[in-house]
Image (cartoon, rainbow, N blue to C red):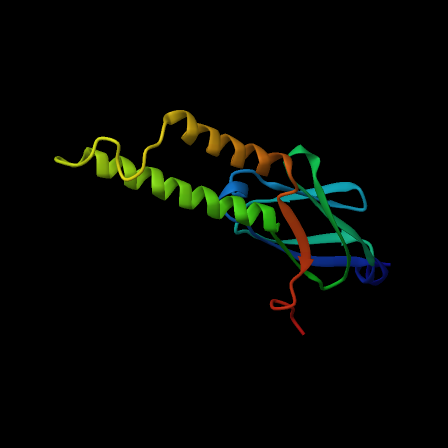
Length: 151
């Protein structure tokens, strides 16, 4: 009886590699519609499930989901979607521009407008648009990790 139970066990490895915007919230992992755990940013988790194969699903904030059919031994990777990567890059570039402008205006003898004129409302608007758009979109996708597959 013990051997029959272990042969029906699905063992998968879930690895999460997401950038800044998705790093503060855990991703919910569901198998065939049932919550089986969560994965934090840059974490790898082994999950044991009593099934031979099924559908694995990761859920972003606002319940946006990505689905993948898995079987025993699969290594699954959770990554950012193209929109989420683009939003991360834009936030990094925008933050660098804002900080460099603040540093430049604080130096003695420089133009008080800075390297480029900006208002606090524009800065806040760009951050709100990027963060809100990213939050309401599907941030993650789930794929088979061929690079980490053990043979």
